[in-house]
Image (cartoon, rainbow, N blue to C red; front, top):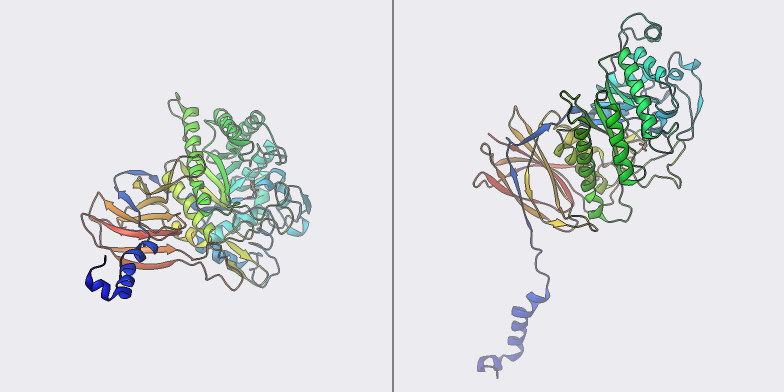
Amino acid sequence: MLPDVMAKNKPWMLVSLVILFWLPMALPLPAQQPQARIKIDTERTIGEVHPHVFGNFAEHLGRCIYGGIFEEGSPLSDAEGFRKDVMEATTRLGVSLLRWPGGNFASGYHWKDGIGPREQRPARPEHAWGAIEPNRFGTDEFLKYCERIGAEPYICINAGLGTVDEAREWVEYCNEARHTWWADQRRKHGRDRPWGVKYWGLGNEIDGPWQLGHKNAEDYGKFALEAAKAMRRADESVKLIASGSSNFGGAADWIGWNRAVLEKLRGEIDYISLHTYIGNRDNNFERFLAASQDIDERIEIVEGLIRAAQSGRPNPRPIYIAFDEWNVWYRARGGSEFDTGRTALQERYNFEDALAMGMFMNSFIRHANVVKMANLAQLVNVIAPIFTNKQGLFLQTTYFPLVEYGKQRNNVALDLLLSSPTYTVGNRRPLPYLDVSATLERGNRLVYLNVLNRSEKMDITGRIDNVEGRVAGEVGVWELNHPDLRAVHDFGNDQKVRPATRAFAAAISNNGFSYTFPKHSLTILRLKVN
Ligand code: AHR
């Protein structure tokens, strides 16, 4: 029985009851914002974020060199043939170190083909990528280019089809100050002062069966040891990077290769290289950005292998990791192992790829004690943040986070305490939705807190607590976000995926504050800590 008053106004009362009780249950509730916690302690340091972590890579591949950084006769190029627009975009990118000439290309490249008057240089078939190499861009052009963009040069020798002597003579050509045959050749070609090339790679991915002159670990170890000895006789100050594994053959093989190389070359090398390319092949955003688990793991395994190779030696030569090829790369791959020809590997990057830049950088920063060099592969057109045609260029989505992270060079990486909602991919251990790293700019007491929210659906609110010094309420925010994960840039249309910056007035309580990191976004907060 309904009470009297209700019975009289029965239809209205029923409607009201429905509105009051049923409707709120039927409608979805506003999503619960999960809580995360990030604790900053500027005394818990990991290591310096070395400027060389903001390195890049230019290979004779597709349109990276020819039609990318170098285009003779173009109205956009200078007298040397360097594209001025590309140079300007490269300088703004803040490239600290440039690796050259490959990559796979290096294993068939004979550097003497690329010196002297350009008209006299031989054109040769190029067997790594199926093009004709005109050799119009060679050692002197590369080194001049590095000087122009303010980047340290890093040359990878030919440890495939090349010889130990060729490698030694290359060092002599670049670095010898006295009057020797090769130093005088350099002078004849216009450069009196030595170029002073400090960083030399002892080959590229020599464990990969596709590599020209591919070797097993033992043969590579012997070659690299002799090359290192001969190159150091030419210039004892050079820093050498051993060819780490290409990841061919799965975990057992890549770990085995790196272990063997480190065993053989410890005492001679300064770095071992690591390469990682990732992709979103099954169109699963959260799985794609879970790749940090692999990246972290690879670094930590190699760090352990370095330690194992050095253990028991009283004064081991320090060996660091050169992560000298990394990027997103999965669309512009051919049916065979690699795409070939002059337009190879022209990957177009979207918004989620730009977020992946933050994921890689966070991992390098978290391992700043051992990752002392990293090279995005590559610079222009070929899996690159800069894309040209004959009329100009556009900046890919991936360009912008790289510029912003670059501001943290020379900062000290901080070891954060993080708790965050987690998710699981396959049968791997759970990983936090928030992928974070932080650095401290010591002089200005500025903390950069880098936060990637890799949840596709959830904004995540974090409580940020600071331990050492007082955190100021005025927080600088840099944020990269876009409603369309697949948004891409193009010629005349590269404004879509751009960062937003603003000041955030944090409500400070107990030396901390709350901040909401939007779903699928990359945020860099700048906090003043006095
Ligand atoms: O960066 C493209 C290619 O990827 C490089 O030439 C090779 O080293 C790697 O496999």
